[in-house]
Image (cartoon, rainbow, N blue to C red; front, top):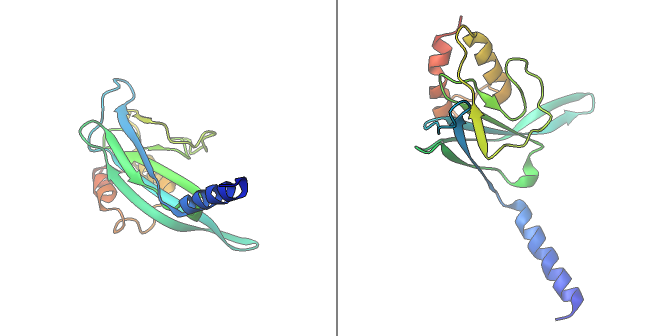
Amino acid sequence: MNTCKILALLGLFALAGTGCATTLSGQVVDARTGQPIPGAVVLGVWTKAGGLPGLPHTVRVAVKEAEADAHGRFVLERPAPLSADEESLTVYKFGYLAWNNLFLFPTYERRVDTSVPAQVRLERFPPGASHSNHIGFISTATAGEGLSSLVPRFWNAIQEELKRRD
């Protein structure tokens, strides 16, 4: 086979993989003890910039959820790589502070490194902290409008948090 045919075949293989969904996997652990946190809910929200010039907005491309197993491990299916501009991953378990790869709680500052680590370390919810502020953060981090029917595990998980709003 000549070099041109080999390069053409390699190019076809490279293009064939661009539309395929991939997975995002990791483990949720307690930040202090390093122990797995089974039952933590992982929510992925993928968005794309849209709108007319001067009237930008964000369009939700996909929403997926998963639950950490007995070892704190999760696998979340991502949409096709070229369909979204931004990936937001939120990990939540009642009794812990929600973790998001884009924003920091409680300041809402944007993270410099938005990659999702292999191990997501959740901090315990501090005594006296505001559940209302925490719910606000979760809503901001997840682009929360209209998610209840799309992500029943996540919605059920935050119900106790919603009851404790101050």
